[in-house]
Image 1 (spheres, rainbow, N blue to C red):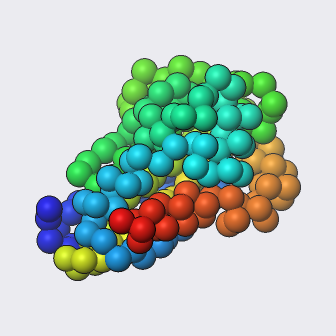
Image 2: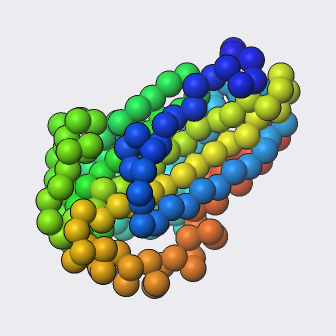
Length: 184
């Protein structure tokens, strides 16, 4: 395992430097980074009651037994970047509709070039930062960038409704992983 400060962190600005919505959550754990990342990669949707249900509602057909890693590696997501201690995925579409309106992306290049009117690009990044030999920090960030004024207005309206719940829901996986790391 690499020493603290030597593991490359994901460059999220390379994908979405000017996001209209940006959320970030961190949680320190008493475990080496590699061990914390292994536990995080094993987390299943059913392990997070609220977020797991929301994901399965928004992406029908997603099994409760799927890990978050599996989720972020399959449709409607595409892997943008991955490394020893990180995974960055993205999706595009009209996230404010109840319809499953996400195009099939062929990869990172299509995500980077996405510019369809009335849609957004969404990035999900998860990584672990080694703090020292026995401690690490779990990190999760989401970014949403509209491609035009219409999608910016729709995103703003959506965020007014769901934004206040985001800290409660999005931090749930980090809390579960931290408890499991501590239990081990």
